[in-house]
Amino acid sequence: MVYFIRKLQATVAFIISLITISSIAYADDVITFAEADTITGESLINLIAFERAKARGVKAEAISLQSDDLVFQAVLNGQVEVGVGSAYAAMQTLGANAPVRNFYQLKKLGFLCVVNKDKVKTWQDLDGKPITIHARGSGTEAISYYMEKVHNIKFSEMSFVPGSEVRGVALMKGTIDATFLDITNTRLVLAKHPEKFKILDLGDVDGSDSLLFARSDFLKERAGDMQILLEELMRSAREINADPTLPARLREEMGLLPDLPQELVDEITPYFETAVKQGMFAEDGGGLPAALGDFDFLVASGGLKGPASNLDPDNFWNFQLLEKAKAALN
Image (cartoon, rainbow, N blue to C red):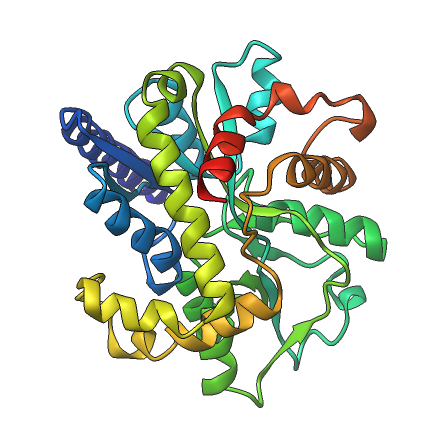
């Protein structure tokens, strides 16, 4: 019975997601960016860019779907225009002729491993223990495999719980003892229970957290509109790197995320200050250096089949659109 209920819930969630996708697909003039996470204050770097692009005649909006797999399938099938996340493994599975390509690095990995320090003090304490991550194919999964290799440990299982805020709540309730959280939810958990939780050092981890990917035919057909969006995304990244307090101010001025809870509103500036210090926002959209860095990280973590030196960046990326946007912006 429990299995049946869970299966029914999953089916209903999938149907709801399909209905959402179908309704959006009719808005032909709107470029939809779909991701498998909640749209929060951390999304302001692209929401600000969307608002500015709108003033230049290009409409874009962000939506949240149930999973990274569903995001990729929606892009692959032409039900949404742009995916937000990581799709390297799916592209490698489809081969060199895959119709989908990355074209912009939205942000680098910015997750932290937060643990119940009464039960976990070092990475060795997690050997043979479970860890909770975002989803299959996500940056959190890649980091988990990478940590296994670096520390010579093996997790008993990787449980998938989408949404950093959901994993944070589970951690505080004692349902889980170790997980990866984004900067905002790490701050919230440690602020509420500093005596109970701690961060495990990840060492030198460098890879993409969120990439933009789309069908190649769409990037060609809407090249002009996409160039404007990339210009505004890079402009947004550069301004925020120069002034991390900007997103909170522009949120109010532009009327973005009006229903965001005050607790999360208060976390906007601290999040961007920390993210900027960590160099999470590339001002040039990543491009070839991001692709090569991702190859090294994902092959090492088991997210891609290597060796990395045998992987062709052109099988995973469209660099031309980004280079045109950079030239226009500069």
